[in-house]
Image 1 (cartoon, rainbow, N blue to C red):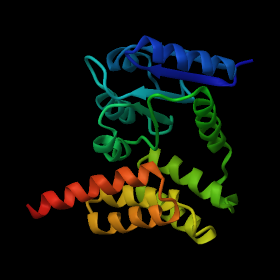
Image 2: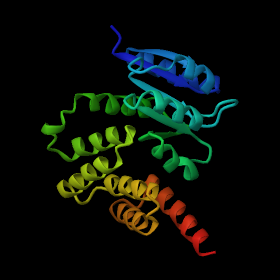
Image 3: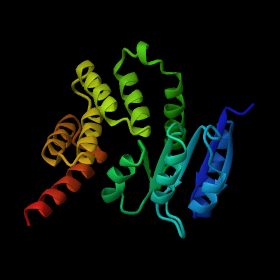
Image 4: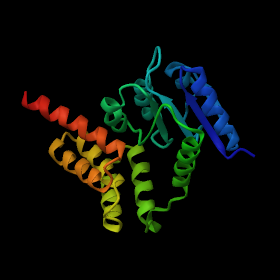
Length: 218
């Protein structure tokens, strides 16, 4: 019995094959699309439990698909997959409703962990959220719906429950960056790196914000 249905959008055959094999091993039903145009024809509200979306494709690219898909449906989780320009586009993708990212190349284990974590969000009942992990999961769910203020509140609750974790500060930094509050975003990226100096999303966020702030000064 299928555990759910996933749409894989990528113009690289090997990536589609890797994702599809891994997802079918997890008892997921999988459909594929080679570009944004084909994906948009297949995409509809409540049709998929999850979408894996490459950003750089011929024709309609991933960011264009993301914007149009979110006009149709704010509920379906969309994972942005890219090896191209991730530093520059990560916040734009979040702004358009993608709360999750994977960088090529990735392993089957990373795919499986990402899918399990995202599917577990469906089980969250807001009034029963009382752990650090649940607050972060719910925040990502809210980011996918572009409910950024509520997501920020959840991340602050997560920090209150475990002040030594890097992820909430990084996500708050990204949300502040969306609001163009670069100075505060920088503080949270730096705080994230204090907690975990090797945390790549915070490293990339800090590079991105510093470039933007330098551009403002030039």
